[in-house]
Image (tube, rainbow, N blue to C red):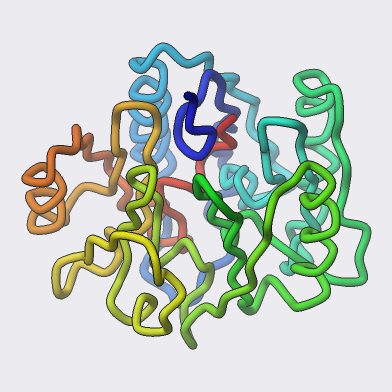
Length: 260
């Protein structure tokens, strides 16, 4: 049986553009280096392709500095795609730019109409439910509308809460196995992963939590050796990708692709 929560045949990515220096950020950690980001992005795409998946690389959108973070624009499920409604005003136009690509790939594409907001970075799809974290970008009305739309395809949506000061739910967690979550202790302390097996990021390596399980591989940000060692010891095939430039814009491994 295919586990649609991490077994994929396709992914959509978008190359970063020179406007990336104007991307949103919670704190100023320095100006992103475009050349270094492009090299890391190429490595990311190559790693996805290594699993046999088709990766569609879209061109840069200079009008939208954060558009490399395609995950926030849609939720891609087996049955169809749901276009999001970003909570960051400067990112609202990214959804319309992504829509034609998804309509060419799916028979059914529906959209969050509002008034609520919701971003893909707050959505974790597991083998049995869709967890959605309320955050500064995702509100109760957005979660409720997603629940109605996904419910048509038989998905159960559960609302959870993102810790204070954490941008997105998946900033602090990722699915790494059918019933296994990689999480920070601060997020798991809420009890949101009851019934799941939880692997904790190493102390001081909380930023490693935003990883992705993509077929047989776990892609995680480089620079977190204790967490990488913990995952390898548990039997995961881990690939470390340079995330130094995306991290300056609060981005991580999951943000860079739509996977389906």
